Image (cartoon, rainbow, N blue to C red):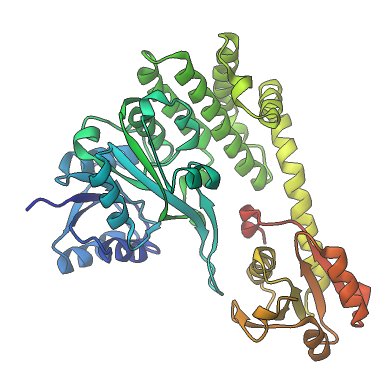
Length: 450
C-alpha cells in the first residue's frame, strides 16, 4: 500500500533540533505517512541520529544529497515521493501532532491542489514556556467570516504572493507539484519563493484553514535568515522567478516586486540589528533597488499596493540604502541601550517583575540571557494568577511582594498601565529609584544582545 502523505525533511547540521522535529512527525495522529529524510552532508551528528530513527521506524527513508542545496534536496524528495500528498518539514521546526489529520481530511473533502493551516513562530525558552506569535495568511476576521476555511483559486489571486510566503505549513497534491521545481542554488535561503510562485500561479483550488499545524523556530543562529549573504540569495532567487513571470499579467509582476521589497526590508532589519552595514552586500542591494526602480518606471502599481509607511521606506531605500539602514539601526540601538541601562541598575540586586503578560515574561528571559539570576518573583493585579508560578518563579499580589521583598527593584513590564502601576508601587512604599519601566516590547532580535 502506498502512503497517503510523503513528508520530505531536508537536513544539514541540525543535531540540536532533529530529535524533537522527527518525534513531532512520527507521532502524528495520522500515521499513514512515509518520511523522506534528505541530508546534505551533516557533520554534527545529524546523520547518525537519522540512522537510528531509520532503524526503528520502517516509514523512514534516509537519502544522501549530492549538493548542499535546499532546492536540490526538496526536488529529490519530490521525485522519490510515493504519497498522494506531499508535505515539507524543516528539520529545526516542529509540527502539531494532529497536523496531517487536519490537512488530509480537508484535502480529501475539497479535492484542493493544496491545503494549508496556520503557523506560529517560536523561540525556545529554557526557563519556561516558549515565546510564540501567530503567522496567518489571512486575518482572524477573514477566517471567522468563512467559518475557519477559506477556499479560492490561487491562479486568480496574485496578491497571495505577498500573503503566503512559506511552503511548510501545508500539504500538496503530488500530481500537482511533481513538475514544480525549486531553484537548486547553494544553501537554504529563499528557494521557497520560486516554489510558491509556481504553486500560486498554477493552482486551481486551494484551502486555508484557521488551524495551527506548524511551529517555526526563530532561535537557530545558523538559520539562513541571519546569513550575511542573504541579499545575494535574494537576487539569485528572483532571477529564477523571472522565467515564470514572463507569461504572467502585470498584477503578478507588481505583486512579486512588492514581495521583493518586503523581503529586502526584512534583511535590512537583520542587518540593522547587527549594528553594522554590510558593505559586501551593497552590490546585491543595488541590484535589488534597480529592479524596484525599473518596475516603478514601467508603471507597475507598487505604490498602490504598499502601505504609506512602506512606500516611504521604499523611497528611502531607493535613494540611499545606508539611509534606510540608519532608520532601522537607530531605534534598535536605543532599545539596546535602554535595556542595558535597566540591567546595569538592577545588577546584583533582587528583582520583582510587575506584569505576567508577554512583556513581563520576555523581560525575564532577556534578564536571564544576560545572566541576571536575581529575579525572585512576579507580581500582578490579576488575582487568578496569585499562588501560581511562571517560568519557575512565584506570582504574588503586589502588596505581598513588597512586604516580602522590601529592598527589591521592581521592573514594570506592561504595555498600557505603567503610570498607574508605578503609583501603586509608590503607595506601597517602594522608592521611586527602585521602580524601573520595561517599555521596549517583544523584539525577538533583543534575545541576541549580551
